[in-house]
Length: 363
Image (cartoon, rainbow, N blue to C red; front, side, top):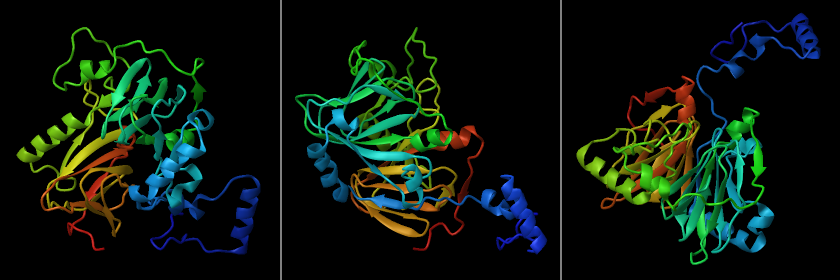
């Protein structure tokens, strides 16, 4: 029998029933009415909590790893961020993982591939690059690069560069929950570069133009690098001509240029611009997001908590949590990068969105 609104089963607790439950337990079975509201809640109840990780607090600890471990020993020199409600799966929120990776000039992490999909968002430094299935991609501040599931990839910093820090975003917890994760190190440790440097940008970066004779049958975007400069220019033009979303300001999704769909089947990404002084209205939706402040400062109210953020800070919004954002400057815009699990929600028919009737949350 379904539990009532107070969370109690409408079944009298009797000695006979307790004995019955014990008999079922010995058979590794159970009575649904005792757990119905737990496994089928009236609405989503995220185990994750809203979080803000301040870059100013993390940066020194990330840099300290340079003196403690090498990429060869550690595999990947990363400080990962964990949500108190998701420590068991090392997730930042929901089924999304994130961490900060650091490398010195001349270093390179060995080539590998895995079932998890991943992206990297460059935070500081010069000379960073990634090689994905033979495509070498140079990376600058606020660029992000895809390393889709199953692709050979390695990361490094050119010898003439500077120490680089970037954010990793992966669906590791999701793939582990599906019991489908594999990890493999490249037999040569470093893969061969088989294409001109930054060739995917030269081929696919113009969103309204498609090259003749180029075939692509993979489920992820053929454009592996999304550059900050064109992204910001597009946001500024859009914000000047459109009111945008009442909940997100001028938000634009990064897409697969051939399909218009998400960059990868399990991870979506977006950048939003908040105009000077802009404060969005509150809404909530199924699906989780990890944000990084690419530009400016402001605050977000998430599930009734105010989080003040500045450039390079990272915060998360759990599934079905009310959230709204505000630009704290009267003279400059603010930009928030996010990656999320919305492609999963939408492809499975689980996406749902709701606006807060009062518009703004109490704090």
